[in-house]
Image (cartoon, rainbow, N blue to C red; front, side):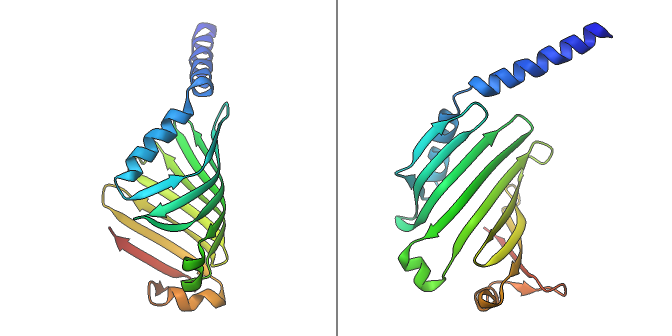
Length: 173
């Protein structure tokens, strides 16, 4: 029994050491190459490699060559079973703010190996709170938005209002 416990502890420590010393900057570069195919470009960022994560600061976000906004702070935490991506303080561009006065305080995306084709989303900001998922295989987005009264006019044309009072946005891409 003691040998089995020692072997399991050794495997666990080996996995932790591999995660700590893995070059996470290369993972970030691989993700950047993948999103370029979707016409999404992240530029001007500062990347700092940590033991169990990656910090990205002051990134400019472009979609189809249109400046969308600036992400002040992003954190990528790649673990074997659960991977998380957290973004704090998204400031929309002036052009986007003239259409929708949007700011995001915190948004997170979580991927769990138990559901490999699903990304779980959670965000809060000037619009209120939102949670949902993206199913990659079915190419489906589902969001529940608990909107503030001043943002309800923006969500009414895009989503259906549920009986519980939140807006449901469901779309295939």
